[in-house]
Length: 106
Image (tube, rainbow, N blue to C red; front, side, top):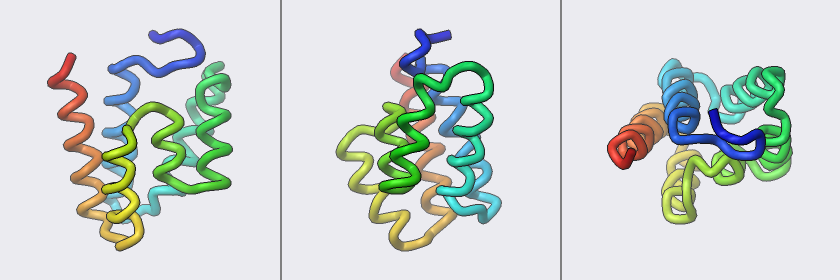
């Protein structure tokens, strides 16, 4: 497990896949990520998840993903476009592919 203030690679992959799965089931990304952040915070990792939850509340889904270190600037631009177009299948697939790419880089 990573230090209390960062996510390790396995955690990023797990969270990306969890969010992608729920979005594929036609749930809103903000709602899904908010639930996951709440669950993860209860596990004693609030130092990591509190800033992401604040970003989610103030700036939305993609900002929270950036705060968690799950996406970089370039991916965030593309995810913003996908989120704005309300395409749950495309968003789910994009998050799944990001998880695959992170996993391959290990």
